[in-house]
Image 1: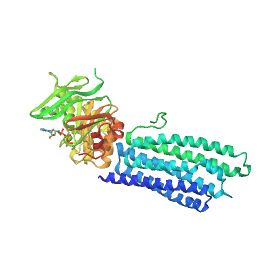
Image 2: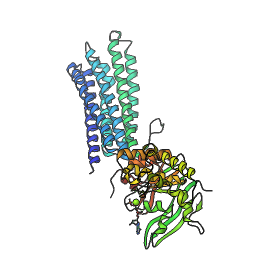
Image 3: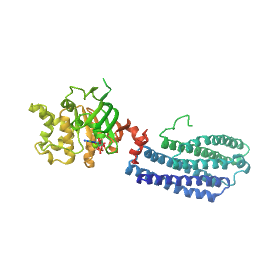
Length: 221
Length: 252
Ligand SMILES: Nc1ncnc2c1ncn2[C@@H]1O[C@H](COP(=O)(O)OP(=O)(O)OP(=O)(O)O)[C@@H](O)[C@H]1O
Ligand SMILES: [Mg+2]
Protein backbone atom coordinates (compact mmCIF):
# COMPACT_ATOMS: atom_id res chain seq x y z
CA UNK A 1 0.00 0.00 0.00
CA UNK A 2 1.33 3.44 -0.87
CA UNK A 3 1.60 6.24 1.65
CA UNK A 4 -1.25 8.00 -0.13
CA UNK A 5 -3.38 4.85 0.05
CA UNK A 6 -2.97 4.68 3.78
CA UNK A 7 -3.95 8.35 4.12
CA UNK A 8 -7.02 7.77 1.95
CA UNK A 9 -8.00 4.74 3.99
CA UNK A 10 -7.69 6.77 7.14
CA UNK A 11 -9.94 9.39 5.60
CA UNK A 12 -12.52 6.74 4.79
CA UNK A 13 -12.31 5.53 8.38
CA UNK A 14 -13.00 9.03 9.64
CA UNK A 15 -16.04 9.36 7.40
CA UNK A 16 -17.25 6.04 8.78
CA UNK A 17 -16.81 7.33 12.31
CA UNK A 18 -18.66 10.53 11.43
CA UNK A 19 -21.48 8.51 9.85
CA UNK A 20 -21.85 6.38 12.96
CA UNK A 21 -21.95 9.42 15.22
CA UNK A 22 -24.66 10.97 13.06
CA UNK A 23 -26.65 7.74 12.99
CA UNK A 24 -26.71 7.53 16.80
CA UNK A 25 -27.62 11.20 17.10
CA UNK A 26 -30.58 10.71 14.82
CA UNK A 27 -32.03 7.79 16.77
CA UNK A 28 -31.38 9.41 20.10
CA UNK A 29 -33.03 12.67 19.12
CA UNK A 30 -36.21 10.95 17.95
CA UNK A 31 -36.22 8.81 21.11
CA UNK A 32 -35.91 11.99 23.13
CA UNK A 33 -38.90 13.49 21.37
CA UNK A 34 -41.14 10.44 21.37
CA UNK A 35 -40.50 9.45 25.00
CA UNK A 36 -39.96 12.99 26.26
CA UNK A 37 -36.51 12.01 27.48
CA UNK A 38 -34.85 15.37 28.10
CA UNK A 39 -31.73 13.65 29.36
CA UNK A 40 -31.27 12.08 25.92
CA UNK A 41 -31.98 15.41 24.24
CA UNK A 42 -29.21 17.02 26.26
CA UNK A 43 -26.85 14.19 25.31
CA UNK A 44 -27.59 14.92 21.66
CA UNK A 45 -26.77 18.58 22.12
CA UNK A 46 -23.57 17.65 23.88
CA UNK A 47 -22.52 15.13 21.23
CA UNK A 48 -23.16 17.69 18.53
CA UNK A 49 -19.90 19.33 19.56
CA UNK A 50 -18.09 16.09 18.86
CA UNK A 51 -19.63 15.94 15.40
CA UNK A 52 -18.49 19.47 14.68
CA UNK A 53 -14.99 18.65 15.84
CA UNK A 54 -14.90 15.55 13.64
CA UNK A 55 -16.12 17.59 10.70
CA UNK A 56 -13.28 20.06 11.15
CA UNK A 57 -10.76 17.26 11.49
CA UNK A 58 -11.93 15.66 8.24
CA UNK A 59 -11.84 19.01 6.44
CA UNK A 60 -8.29 19.55 7.58
CA UNK A 61 -7.25 16.05 6.54
CA UNK A 62 -8.71 16.60 3.05
CA UNK A 63 -6.81 19.85 2.82
CA UNK A 64 -3.56 18.21 3.90
CA UNK A 65 -3.89 15.35 1.44
CA UNK A 66 -4.51 17.83 -1.37
CA UNK A 67 -1.50 19.91 -0.43
CA UNK A 68 0.93 17.11 0.33
CA UNK A 69 0.01 14.43 -2.22
CA UNK A 70 -1.53 16.37 -5.11
CA UNK A 71 -3.90 13.48 -5.77
CA UNK A 72 -5.26 13.01 -9.28
CA UNK A 73 -7.98 10.99 -10.99
CA UNK A 74 -9.82 8.58 -8.70
CA UNK A 75 -7.77 9.70 -5.69
CA UNK A 76 -8.72 13.31 -6.31
CA UNK A 77 -12.37 12.39 -6.68
CA UNK A 78 -12.19 10.41 -3.45
CA UNK A 79 -10.90 13.41 -1.52
CA UNK A 80 -13.52 15.67 -3.06
CA UNK A 81 -16.26 13.18 -2.27
CA UNK A 82 -15.06 12.80 1.33
CA UNK A 83 -15.03 16.57 1.69
CA UNK A 84 -18.62 16.87 0.53
CA UNK A 85 -19.95 13.76 2.29
CA UNK A 86 -18.46 15.18 5.45
CA UNK A 87 -20.49 18.33 5.10
CA UNK A 88 -23.69 16.42 4.26
CA UNK A 89 -23.23 14.32 7.38
CA UNK A 90 -22.68 17.41 9.48
CA UNK A 91 -25.96 18.84 8.18
CA UNK A 92 -27.70 15.63 9.24
CA UNK A 93 -26.23 16.16 12.68
CA UNK A 94 -27.70 19.67 12.72
CA UNK A 95 -31.15 18.31 11.93
CA UNK A 96 -30.90 15.78 14.80
CA UNK A 97 -29.89 18.58 17.09
CA UNK A 98 -32.99 20.48 15.97
CA UNK A 99 -35.20 17.51 16.80
CA UNK A 100 -33.54 17.19 20.20
CA UNK A 101 -34.24 20.83 20.97
CA UNK A 102 -37.95 20.24 20.22
CA UNK A 103 -37.84 17.49 22.83
CA UNK A 104 -36.49 19.99 25.34
CA UNK A 105 -39.43 22.31 24.68
CA UNK A 106 -42.06 19.68 25.53
CA UNK A 107 -44.13 20.44 28.63
CA UNK A 108 -45.87 17.06 28.52
CA UNK A 109 -45.48 13.97 26.34
CA UNK A 110 -46.76 14.00 22.78
CA UNK A 111 -50.16 12.30 22.30
CA UNK A 112 -49.85 8.50 22.14
CA UNK A 113 -52.37 8.07 19.33
CA UNK A 114 -50.55 10.60 17.13
CA UNK A 115 -47.19 8.94 17.71
CA UNK A 116 -48.63 5.54 16.93
CA UNK A 117 -49.95 6.70 13.59
CA UNK A 118 -46.82 8.63 12.67
CA UNK A 119 -44.42 5.67 12.93
CA UNK A 120 -41.42 7.96 13.37
CA UNK A 121 -39.18 5.02 14.19
CA UNK A 122 -39.97 3.36 10.87
CA UNK A 123 -38.50 6.43 9.21
CA UNK A 124 -35.53 6.44 11.58
CA UNK A 125 -34.86 2.75 10.80
CA UNK A 126 -34.87 3.50 7.12
CA UNK A 127 -32.63 6.56 7.45
CA UNK A 128 -30.15 4.68 9.60
CA UNK A 129 -30.00 1.99 6.95
CA UNK A 130 -29.37 4.58 4.26
CA UNK A 131 -26.53 6.13 6.23
CA UNK A 132 -25.03 2.73 6.90
CA UNK A 133 -25.15 1.56 3.34
CA UNK A 134 -23.78 4.89 2.13
CA UNK A 135 -20.85 4.48 4.48
CA UNK A 136 -20.21 0.96 3.24
CA UNK A 137 -20.60 2.01 -0.39
CA UNK A 138 -18.05 4.78 0.13
CA UNK A 139 -15.66 2.50 1.99
CA UNK A 140 -15.83 -0.19 -0.72
CA UNK A 141 -16.10 2.15 -3.69
CA UNK A 142 -19.37 0.40 -4.52
CA UNK A 143 -21.46 2.66 -6.74
CA UNK A 144 -24.13 -0.01 -7.33
CA UNK A 145 -24.84 0.05 -3.62
CA UNK A 146 -25.00 3.84 -3.68
CA UNK A 147 -27.53 3.71 -6.51
CA UNK A 148 -29.85 1.61 -4.35
CA UNK A 149 -30.22 4.63 -2.06
CA UNK A 150 -32.37 6.28 -4.72
CA UNK A 151 -34.72 3.32 -4.70
CA UNK A 152 -35.16 3.19 -0.95
CA UNK A 153 -35.84 6.90 -0.93
CA UNK A 154 -39.23 6.29 -2.59
CA UNK A 155 -40.59 4.57 0.52
CA UNK A 156 -39.40 7.43 2.65
CA UNK A 157 -41.19 9.93 0.42
CA UNK A 158 -44.41 7.97 0.76
CA UNK A 159 -44.03 7.90 4.54
CA UNK A 160 -43.36 11.60 4.53
CA UNK A 161 -46.49 12.56 2.62
CA UNK A 162 -48.56 10.37 4.88
CA UNK A 163 -47.00 11.77 8.05
CA UNK A 164 -47.54 15.39 7.07
CA UNK A 165 -51.20 14.65 6.40
CA UNK A 166 -51.57 12.94 9.78
CA UNK A 167 -50.21 15.99 11.56
CA UNK A 168 -52.43 18.36 9.56
CA UNK A 169 -55.50 16.29 10.39
CA UNK A 170 -54.55 16.33 14.03
CA UNK A 171 -54.41 20.09 14.40
CA UNK A 172 -58.18 20.99 14.50
CA UNK A 173 -59.02 18.68 17.41
CA UNK A 174 -55.98 19.71 19.47
CA UNK A 175 -55.75 23.50 19.53
CA UNK A 176 -54.04 23.32 22.93
CA UNK A 177 -51.01 21.58 21.40
CA UNK A 178 -50.35 23.79 18.42
CA UNK A 179 -46.79 24.61 19.45
CA UNK A 180 -45.86 20.94 19.89
CA UNK A 181 -47.63 19.93 16.70
CA UNK A 182 -45.70 22.51 14.73
CA UNK A 183 -42.52 20.99 16.12
CA UNK A 184 -43.67 17.51 15.16
CA UNK A 185 -44.38 18.80 11.69
CA UNK A 186 -40.86 20.25 11.53
CA UNK A 187 -39.46 16.94 12.74
CA UNK A 188 -41.09 15.15 9.83
CA UNK A 189 -39.58 17.73 7.50
CA UNK A 190 -36.17 17.29 9.05
CA UNK A 191 -36.33 13.55 8.57
CA UNK A 192 -37.20 14.21 4.94
CA UNK A 193 -34.15 16.49 4.62
CA UNK A 194 -31.95 13.77 6.11
CA UNK A 195 -33.25 11.44 3.40
CA UNK A 196 -32.33 14.04 0.76
CA UNK A 197 -28.86 14.42 2.23
CA UNK A 198 -28.44 10.67 1.93
CA UNK A 199 -29.24 10.98 -1.74
CA UNK A 200 -26.64 13.73 -2.03
CA UNK A 201 -24.09 11.45 -0.42
CA UNK A 202 -24.97 8.66 -2.85
CA UNK A 203 -24.35 11.11 -5.70
CA UNK A 204 -20.91 11.94 -4.33
CA UNK A 205 -20.07 8.24 -4.13
CA UNK A 206 -21.12 7.64 -7.72
CA UNK A 207 -19.01 10.63 -8.79
CA UNK A 208 -16.05 9.25 -6.87
CA UNK A 209 -16.29 5.77 -8.35
CA UNK A 210 -17.56 6.45 -11.87
CA UNK A 211 -16.54 10.07 -12.48
CA UNK A 212 -20.17 10.54 -13.46
CA UNK A 213 -21.96 13.63 -12.21
CA UNK A 214 -25.55 12.86 -11.23
CA UNK A 215 -26.33 16.16 -9.62
CA UNK A 216 -29.12 18.05 -11.34
CA UNK A 217 -29.91 15.02 -13.47
CA UNK A 218 -33.44 13.67 -13.57
CA UNK A 219 -32.69 10.03 -14.22
CA UNK A 220 -30.63 8.68 -11.33
CA UNK A 221 -30.73 4.95 -11.93
CA UNK B 1 -3.83 20.95 -45.08
CA UNK B 2 -3.67 19.21 -41.78
CA UNK B 3 -5.45 20.50 -38.71
CA UNK B 4 -2.28 19.83 -36.73
CA UNK B 5 0.92 21.85 -36.66
CA UNK B 6 2.94 18.69 -36.17
CA UNK B 7 1.70 15.15 -36.25
CA UNK B 8 2.66 11.54 -36.74
CA UNK B 9 0.58 9.04 -38.65
CA UNK B 10 1.13 5.36 -37.93
CA UNK B 11 4.73 5.92 -37.01
CA UNK B 12 6.87 3.02 -35.89
CA UNK B 13 10.53 3.38 -35.05
CA UNK B 14 13.15 0.66 -34.72
CA UNK B 15 16.59 0.78 -33.16
CA UNK B 16 18.01 -2.15 -35.13
CA UNK B 17 15.68 -5.01 -34.26
CA UNK B 18 14.03 -3.38 -31.25
CA UNK B 19 10.87 -1.49 -31.86
CA UNK B 20 10.81 1.66 -29.73
CA UNK B 21 7.63 3.25 -31.12
CA UNK B 22 4.57 1.29 -32.15
CA UNK B 23 2.25 2.75 -34.73
CA UNK B 24 1.84 6.16 -33.14
CA UNK B 25 -0.80 8.50 -34.51
CA UNK B 26 -0.88 11.80 -32.64
CA UNK B 27 -1.18 15.46 -33.55
CA UNK B 28 -0.38 18.77 -31.87
CA UNK B 29 -2.66 21.68 -32.83
CA UNK B 30 -1.04 25.07 -33.47
CA UNK B 31 -0.37 27.22 -30.38
CA UNK B 32 -1.08 24.37 -28.03
CA UNK B 33 1.16 22.66 -25.51
CA UNK B 34 1.12 18.89 -25.55
CA UNK B 35 2.85 16.96 -22.77
CA UNK B 36 4.12 13.42 -23.12
CA UNK B 37 4.28 11.38 -19.96
CA UNK B 38 5.16 7.76 -19.31
CA UNK B 39 7.64 5.55 -17.49
CA UNK B 40 11.34 5.59 -18.28
CA UNK B 41 12.16 3.91 -21.56
CA UNK B 42 8.65 4.12 -23.01
CA UNK B 43 9.84 6.12 -26.01
CA UNK B 44 9.13 9.73 -25.08
CA UNK B 45 12.48 11.16 -26.13
CA UNK B 46 12.53 8.97 -29.20
CA UNK B 47 9.14 10.32 -30.17
CA UNK B 48 10.18 13.92 -29.62
CA UNK B 49 13.31 13.48 -31.75
CA UNK B 50 11.19 12.44 -34.71
CA UNK B 51 10.20 16.06 -35.25
CA UNK B 52 13.66 17.50 -35.70
CA UNK B 53 15.08 14.35 -37.27
CA UNK B 54 17.55 13.87 -34.47
CA UNK B 55 17.04 10.12 -34.60
CA UNK B 56 18.64 10.19 -38.06
CA UNK B 57 22.01 10.63 -36.43
CA UNK B 58 21.73 7.28 -34.65
CA UNK B 59 22.99 4.21 -36.47
CA UNK B 60 20.48 1.54 -37.41
CA UNK B 61 17.37 3.64 -36.88
CA UNK B 62 14.43 2.91 -39.16
CA UNK B 63 11.26 4.99 -39.25
CA UNK B 64 7.96 3.88 -40.77
CA UNK B 65 4.89 6.02 -41.28
CA UNK B 66 4.59 9.76 -41.71
CA UNK B 67 5.94 12.62 -39.63
CA UNK B 68 4.28 15.85 -40.69
CA UNK B 69 5.14 19.50 -40.12
CA UNK B 70 2.48 21.83 -41.46
CA UNK B 71 0.99 18.81 -43.18
CA UNK B 72 4.21 17.94 -45.05
CA UNK B 73 6.24 14.82 -44.49
CA UNK B 74 9.63 15.88 -43.14
CA UNK B 75 11.14 12.48 -44.01
CA UNK B 76 10.24 12.84 -47.68
CA UNK B 77 12.99 12.90 -50.31
CA UNK B 78 14.45 16.33 -50.83
CA UNK B 79 13.64 17.71 -47.40
CA UNK B 80 16.75 19.26 -45.87
CA UNK B 81 17.38 18.56 -42.22
CA UNK B 82 18.66 22.11 -41.66
CA UNK B 83 15.34 23.52 -42.87
CA UNK B 84 13.47 21.28 -40.47
CA UNK B 85 15.67 22.30 -37.54
CA UNK B 86 15.18 25.98 -38.32
CA UNK B 87 11.47 25.55 -37.86
CA UNK B 88 11.63 23.08 -35.02
CA UNK B 89 13.75 24.14 -32.05
CA UNK B 90 14.77 21.86 -29.21
CA UNK B 91 15.56 22.31 -25.53
CA UNK B 92 17.22 19.47 -23.66
CA UNK B 93 17.05 18.13 -20.13
CA UNK B 94 20.50 19.37 -19.16
CA UNK B 95 21.19 22.99 -20.12
CA UNK B 96 23.90 22.79 -22.78
CA UNK B 97 25.21 26.29 -23.42
CA UNK B 98 28.31 26.60 -25.59
CA UNK B 99 31.49 27.80 -23.88
CA UNK B 100 30.99 31.25 -25.34
CA UNK B 101 29.49 34.51 -24.20
CA UNK B 102 25.80 34.84 -23.43
CA UNK B 103 25.38 36.97 -26.53
CA UNK B 104 27.16 34.51 -28.82
CA UNK B 105 25.12 31.60 -27.52
CA UNK B 106 21.91 33.26 -28.61
CA UNK B 107 23.37 34.60 -31.84
CA UNK B 108 24.76 31.19 -32.76
CA UNK B 109 21.81 29.99 -34.80
CA UNK B 110 21.72 33.18 -36.81
CA UNK B 111 25.44 33.09 -37.56
CA UNK B 112 25.39 29.49 -38.80
CA UNK B 113 22.46 30.43 -40.98
CA UNK B 114 24.65 33.06 -42.55
CA UNK B 115 23.14 36.19 -40.99
CA UNK B 116 25.73 38.99 -40.80
CA UNK B 117 23.71 42.16 -40.22
CA UNK B 118 25.00 43.32 -36.84
CA UNK B 119 21.98 45.37 -35.88
CA UNK B 120 19.58 42.58 -36.83
CA UNK B 121 21.57 40.12 -34.74
CA UNK B 122 21.56 42.45 -31.74
CA UNK B 123 17.86 43.02 -31.97
CA UNK B 124 17.15 39.34 -32.33
CA UNK B 125 19.33 38.41 -29.35
CA UNK B 126 17.54 40.94 -27.18
CA UNK B 127 14.10 39.80 -28.32
CA UNK B 128 14.95 36.14 -27.73
CA UNK B 129 16.36 36.85 -24.27
CA UNK B 130 13.26 38.86 -23.38
CA UNK B 131 11.00 36.07 -24.60
CA UNK B 132 12.94 33.61 -22.51
CA UNK B 133 12.48 35.90 -19.48
CA UNK B 134 16.23 36.24 -19.05
CA UNK B 135 16.94 39.73 -20.43
CA UNK B 136 16.64 41.65 -17.18
CA UNK B 137 19.08 39.33 -15.47
CA UNK B 138 21.81 39.41 -18.13
CA UNK B 139 21.43 42.64 -20.12
CA UNK B 140 24.45 44.25 -18.45
CA UNK B 141 26.64 41.17 -18.82
CA UNK B 142 26.08 39.94 -22.33
CA UNK B 143 29.79 39.34 -22.80
CA UNK B 144 30.06 37.17 -19.74
CA UNK B 145 30.57 33.45 -20.29
CA UNK B 146 27.31 31.50 -20.47
CA UNK B 147 28.88 28.87 -18.25
CA UNK B 148 28.93 31.38 -15.39
CA UNK B 149 25.13 31.46 -15.29
CA UNK B 150 23.11 29.42 -12.83
CA UNK B 151 21.44 26.21 -14.02
CA UNK B 152 18.04 27.86 -14.31
CA UNK B 153 19.52 30.81 -16.20
CA UNK B 154 21.43 28.47 -18.49
CA UNK B 155 18.23 26.64 -19.32
CA UNK B 156 16.46 29.89 -20.17
CA UNK B 157 19.48 30.82 -22.25
CA UNK B 158 19.08 27.59 -24.20
CA UNK B 159 15.44 28.45 -24.72
CA UNK B 160 16.49 31.90 -25.98
CA UNK B 161 18.98 30.22 -28.31
CA UNK B 162 16.21 28.03 -29.68
CA UNK B 163 13.89 31.01 -30.11
CA UNK B 164 16.42 33.21 -31.90
CA UNK B 165 16.06 31.41 -35.22
CA UNK B 166 12.29 31.90 -35.00
CA UNK B 167 11.09 28.35 -35.13
CA UNK B 168 7.37 27.68 -35.07
CA UNK B 169 7.63 24.52 -33.01
CA UNK B 170 9.58 23.95 -29.81
CA UNK B 171 10.44 20.51 -28.48
CA UNK B 172 11.37 20.26 -24.82
CA UNK B 173 12.79 17.12 -23.26
CA UNK B 174 12.40 17.43 -19.47
CA UNK B 175 13.44 21.08 -19.58
CA UNK B 176 13.27 21.72 -15.86
CA UNK B 177 14.11 18.41 -14.26
CA UNK B 178 17.49 19.75 -13.15
CA UNK B 179 16.17 23.03 -11.78
CA UNK B 180 15.15 24.40 -8.40
CA UNK B 181 11.44 25.22 -7.80
CA UNK B 182 11.81 28.92 -8.61
CA UNK B 183 13.60 28.32 -11.90
CA UNK B 184 11.13 25.57 -12.62
CA UNK B 185 8.21 27.93 -12.05
CA UNK B 186 9.87 30.46 -14.37
CA UNK B 187 10.20 27.88 -17.12
CA UNK B 188 6.57 26.89 -16.69
CA UNK B 189 5.44 30.52 -16.86
CA UNK B 190 7.58 30.88 -19.93
CA UNK B 191 5.97 27.90 -21.62
CA UNK B 192 2.61 29.43 -20.88
CA UNK B 193 3.72 32.68 -22.54
CA UNK B 194 5.45 31.01 -25.46
CA UNK B 195 2.43 29.08 -26.60
CA UNK B 196 0.86 32.30 -27.81
CA UNK B 197 3.40 32.20 -30.64
CA UNK B 198 4.69 28.66 -30.73
CA UNK B 199 3.50 25.09 -30.75
CA UNK B 200 5.13 23.15 -27.96
CA UNK B 201 5.69 19.45 -27.39
CA UNK B 202 7.17 18.72 -23.98
CA UNK B 203 8.36 15.54 -22.30
CA UNK B 204 8.21 15.59 -18.54
CA UNK B 205 8.47 13.15 -15.68
CA UNK B 206 6.80 15.67 -13.42
CA UNK B 207 3.11 14.88 -13.57
CA UNK B 208 2.12 18.12 -11.91
CA UNK B 209 4.14 20.00 -14.47
CA UNK B 210 2.35 18.23 -17.31
CA UNK B 211 -0.94 19.07 -15.63
CA UNK B 212 -0.01 22.72 -15.22
CA UNK B 213 1.53 23.59 -18.56
CA UNK B 214 -0.19 21.47 -21.17
CA UNK B 215 -3.49 21.61 -23.00
CA UNK B 216 -3.35 17.97 -24.03
CA UNK B 217 -1.47 15.05 -22.53
CA UNK B 218 -0.33 11.82 -24.14
CA UNK B 219 0.51 8.78 -22.04
CA UNK B 220 3.08 6.42 -23.58
CA UNK B 221 3.80 2.92 -22.35
CA UNK B 222 6.25 0.44 -23.88
CA UNK B 223 6.38 2.36 -27.14
CA UNK B 224 2.63 2.60 -27.46
CA UNK B 225 0.33 5.59 -27.18
CA UNK B 226 -2.10 4.43 -24.51
CA UNK B 227 -4.20 7.53 -24.06
CA UNK B 228 -4.32 11.02 -25.50
CA UNK B 229 -6.79 13.45 -24.02
CA UNK B 230 -7.33 16.98 -22.86
CA UNK B 231 -5.09 17.41 -19.84
CA UNK B 232 -7.93 18.26 -17.49
CA UNK B 233 -9.75 15.08 -18.48
CA UNK B 234 -6.71 12.86 -18.36
CA UNK B 235 -5.86 13.96 -14.84
CA UNK B 236 -9.38 13.82 -13.46
CA UNK B 237 -10.88 10.93 -15.31
CA UNK B 238 -8.46 8.83 -17.33
CA UNK B 239 -10.18 6.32 -19.60
CA UNK B 240 -7.51 3.67 -19.50
CA UNK B 241 -6.60 1.72 -16.42
CA UNK B 242 -2.89 1.86 -17.25
CA UNK B 243 -3.06 5.65 -17.37
CA UNK B 244 -4.89 5.73 -14.07
CA UNK B 245 -2.32 3.48 -12.42
CA UNK B 246 0.53 5.55 -13.77
CA UNK B 247 -0.72 9.00 -12.83
CA UNK B 248 -1.85 7.88 -9.39
CA UNK B 249 1.56 6.33 -8.77
CA UNK B 250 0.35 2.73 -8.56
CA UNK B 251 2.31 1.36 -11.44
CA UNK B 252 3.65 -2.14 -11.87
N1 LIG C 1 20.35 5.25 -29.37
C1 LIG C 1 19.65 4.19 -29.03
N2 LIG C 1 19.99 2.96 -29.46
C2 LIG C 1 19.27 1.87 -29.12
N3 LIG C 1 18.17 1.89 -28.35
C3 LIG C 1 17.78 3.08 -27.88
C4 LIG C 1 18.48 4.29 -28.19
N4 LIG C 1 17.85 5.31 -27.58
C5 LIG C 1 16.81 4.77 -26.93
N5 LIG C 1 16.75 3.45 -27.12
C6 LIG C 1 15.74 2.53 -26.55
O1 LIG C 1 14.44 2.94 -26.96
C7 LIG C 1 13.53 2.88 -25.89
C8 LIG C 1 12.92 4.27 -25.68
O2 LIG C 1 13.92 5.15 -25.22
P1 LIG C 1 13.65 6.66 -24.95
O3 LIG C 1 14.94 7.32 -24.64
O4 LIG C 1 12.84 7.22 -26.06
O5 LIG C 1 12.73 6.57 -23.64
P2 LIG C 1 12.17 7.72 -22.70
O6 LIG C 1 10.73 7.48 -22.59
O7 LIG C 1 12.62 9.05 -23.17
O8 LIG C 1 12.84 7.37 -21.31
P3 LIG C 1 13.38 8.36 -20.14
O9 LIG C 1 12.13 8.79 -19.43
O10 LIG C 1 14.19 7.47 -19.28
O11 LIG C 1 14.11 9.49 -20.75
C9 LIG C 1 14.29 2.36 -24.70
O12 LIG C 1 14.03 0.98 -24.60
C10 LIG C 1 15.72 2.62 -25.05
O13 LIG C 1 16.55 1.63 -24.49
MG1 LIG D 1 13.91 10.58 -22.37
